[in-house]
Image (cartoon, rainbow, N blue to C red; front, side, top):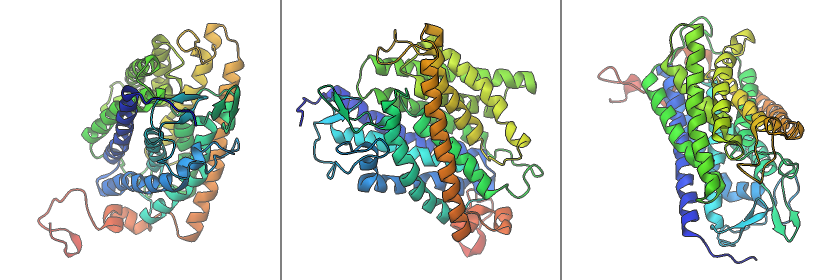
Length: 434
């Protein structure tokens, strides 16, 4: 065991970042909850909240080991090397180096990534999902898809001398993904696409009005996501250092530029900028800068964000062309912006800002890095899509994945939870007192 002296400042930053990332999932619940209709608010928010419970337990039981166990690990999945998380609290190896933070601090930080990833998927199947089926899906998908993919991307192994063991195969190939463009956003976006196909369209889709019931909730949720994302990106430096500072400023300016890019496109297309547009644009920027935040300059981050906002503003409309009911635009925002963010490193990557990375095309590095990034991004997309399609199909054919049509029309909140989000009368349905 390599003995290191714990650094209280780095440890404090990682712990604070873990709390910030956890806040993102309730923020996502508000963001998604505001975007659905009144009769679906609680079900939508509950899908995020139950994910916190399920993934937290799985992470301690075996998830952290599958993602980051390195003793005897394969390139495809981790090993059960950390049989007790209380062990090796001052010896954490990751990214080929030893960090002066407790292993438990890193485990807690990465847990929050594991939580929000399946929660993101829920937006693609809003308004029609059986709650019990969703809970089962989260447990299976997180085990078979997220934990292995996290190992591929985030596990840089244990370095002893010049020998590194236990690294994930994408990390070993040099794929640059600082905070989860592949493991989180492409992974969730591809899964959302698969589930939208499995569950089919909502009753009345393209006929009935399905506009967001509360835009203030959407804006509040987007604000909490933006706030928490500083922990998501800057916290991935695993220390209070220069790379964390770079990631933080890049996160801010890319998100701001994306919000402006989205409403710029809206102004051209429909004549007016919207609150839903600026919130969605901000999220697209957060997604796009996630993999690139520590590998590009702030000027590059602005370009990445602005392009992401405009690109996603166009992409969300494609679901109508493809007749795909991706309810809350998980594919149009997370998959598209995630792909763009990963590929953009091959264009804007600069060794001048981070010596660990490679130069992209615009900095004289040629197409090598772009090729590496494309391989990683599309490999994760294909695996997640195929695996989710199989998992979703099996659940749908066994216990059923969506509620009955009459329950969907009447209100999924009451059908699944015996509650309604807003009590407008003196008493509620079914004899429950208000």
